[in-house]
Length: 188
Image (cartoon, rainbow, N blue to C red; front, side):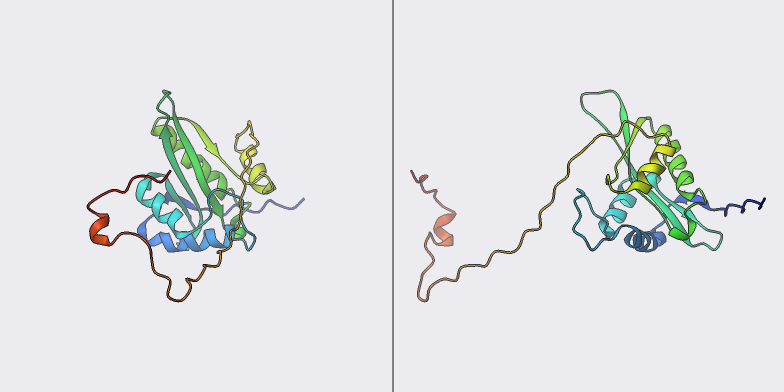
């Protein structure tokens, strides 16, 4: 019987400013798709920088002994006006394919949940595309359940050609000077 390979160690820590570009590039490799997305949010630099600025304690990285970022997790918390519970949302979690299977995702997830619990969170939400079987399996292993069927729809809209004004056609309406002084009655 072959001996089990030793799991590689990582350090889970808060993201620093210097990590933002590396996290973005890793996320881009993991989440970028040439297909139009039906998700309500897509991966871009704004996702990383906004979360880093708004929730730095919930912007985590997994750092390899070589100091390379091999995983990350971004989360946030919120409270509903009508309730007494505080909720957490695990927005993004990603691990370099070369490090998947080394429990890096689990370590990130556990640290995120620990920090959210310290902040008073009682329930954590996550979301993934129904077609992302790997993510769904991972989150079930992490204890997430009660999947809800959500429908997200998207549409690519094409720019409509602008109608050109006929030669000599004047713009109708009030001059700038008059527009600011009086209101015209609404048309019937």
